[in-house]
Image (cartoon, rainbow, N blue to C red; front, side, top):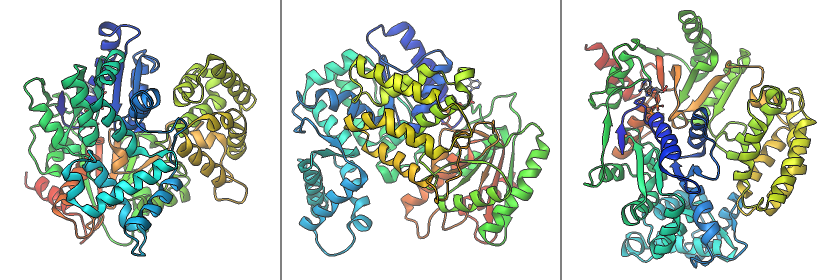
Length: 565
Ligand SMILES: Nc1ncnc2c1ncn2[C@@H]1O[C@H](COP(=O)(O)OP(=O)(O)OP(=O)(O)O)[C@@H](O)[C@H]1O
């Protein structure tokens, strides 16, 4: 287990280790399973592995704990493990989940309030917190919630559906019950690799305990308790600590931060409020921390970022490209203000938050971007290669493309379609529509797991339709073709995790935003870690933009401690 701070090379170590294990330790047909927090992290790992000459495929599973549960446990073993699912079960869409909650609410609570606003988060948290449905903790900690959870799960099951949390819960239950299932997983994947352990929650932790410490799968995990920012989704960073303290776990701690300039590394520990002894390597550049207490509304502050802060940074670093710059903010609505200000000045942006025109973390969307790049230029440059696009499709659509003949037919249809549309000026709407119509329609109709993803595609198709706000969007704009590395990154602090940029602007660093209004002790601690995660994305310059007189307590403390030196 590697426990280390930001920029210490955890992800780099993990990918190199994975590559070495695959080429030297684990021989065909066995492989390695690598579990990470979200699809964005999975893509990042796949790309880094590719740079080492390793394609994810038959022998390497890279994905979230949900996709591991679904693809490696539920789909192959639901029936023999007696999971009680119908043969043709489906993954519930958002609408179906809402329906199940409404029906469960009417059965159990029925007080006339909005079940989604009032109960959804509580329900999710309770389900992730208490995994064993027969345990006294589950049944007694909150009797009403326990009943609501049971009713909700019954409603889903009655409709032949499972949702995301079910994936891990059902898998965990089956693994606990059946030693043969654990042995089967071990036969296929004698090594399990886990990235971002601190954010993965109880279900994964219990899976790891069963698969690794009972069944004997080798474990390699990396994490950082200080970067735990998903408490609200059930992350429990204490589990990482507990694992590292076991006698049969060797824990390695890394001290150097290779990413950030030395001044930024030093300041980052003030941002966290803990002295961790992290340092930059001896030959590291210094890096600079800037504070910008501003007056006025966020619109005016955004104008300052684009008209003053950014031009000055570009002047200091003549080879800086806009793609090396990221603006981070605590909530997506601030991203709207920034996106508008950027557009008014003719800057292209890439947004990674839930207000983005489509969710960048979606696996299908990433695949569509890659296919679009192929149409714009990849068919000529080999970047990406068509075989890679097909490989990813085969993995993503594995439950719909089960035979060689089906895969071949899909590949032919896809190639024909993309080949005829090698033009970056095509309307995105038409391109997506054609893809949806031909190769994808079959896949979606045969798949039991892609309802959510197909809804995202349909949503994007309607947002780009004639008369809609994004009707002008071209294929090239969709995938950033021709803009090189010139799109400014706009992202929430949460989505900036794991990434790095030469210049980072932390925007809206105000009380009420980070932490939120009237925070609990726990929320203050998590907000501080979020502040720290954002801060440590910067290589060369970090800019804290805040409202004068309203600055976040974390920014104030940081400025005070830096001025004390
Ligand atoms: N031993 C090393 N020597 C030089 N550079 C390194 C070394 N290890 C990692 N790096 C570089 O440092 C940067 C940070 O590495 P990486 O992303 O793996 O860190 P991390 O620990 O996963 O960070 P975080 O937790 O903040 O996401 C990368 O640019 C990586 O290439």
